[in-house]
Image 1: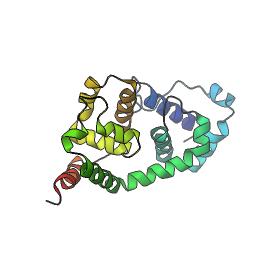
Image 2: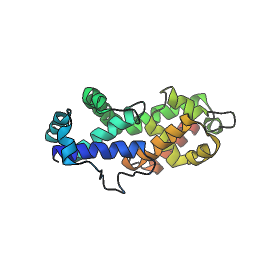
Image 3: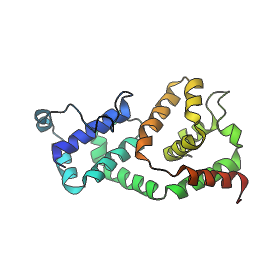
Image 4: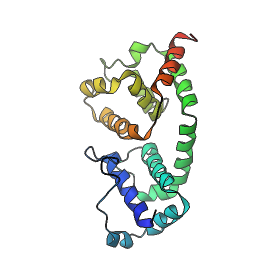
Length: 198
């Protein structure tokens, strides 16, 4: 990957995580960047260094990690990635490598405190699941896996018409194509967490 390709990858992920209409896979990571605009950037050295140090796949994962771990992809600027990018990337890698364990821990804790029906109940505003995510007691990955199992996002999208859920919902949808999960295996973990070993 050339430094310019690395820059284009960054722009493509920025578009993917901030624009409803843009899909990284559908547009094959393309963006409208020009070589001329790239050479005018003061932070060009960062893309040169990243392209030199990482494989194509690692560059993609590096930007996924940073957009997933930031508080708001809309306001994430390249300076933050330059400063905290590698720390975020290592943290994300650790999460992905231990995803089954993380999911099991979060699920056991959640269902030891709350009944299954109550977790997704949004009749009185923000459901418990969303509150746990916002207070960082449940990871985005667990939110995504729960949607793959229970399909709760469509219901929340209809009933929760506030900007907080809208942001979280978009983040789940945008992150989903980059997470490969065995739904049957995660269903088994949920079943065990609710019913005990069966």
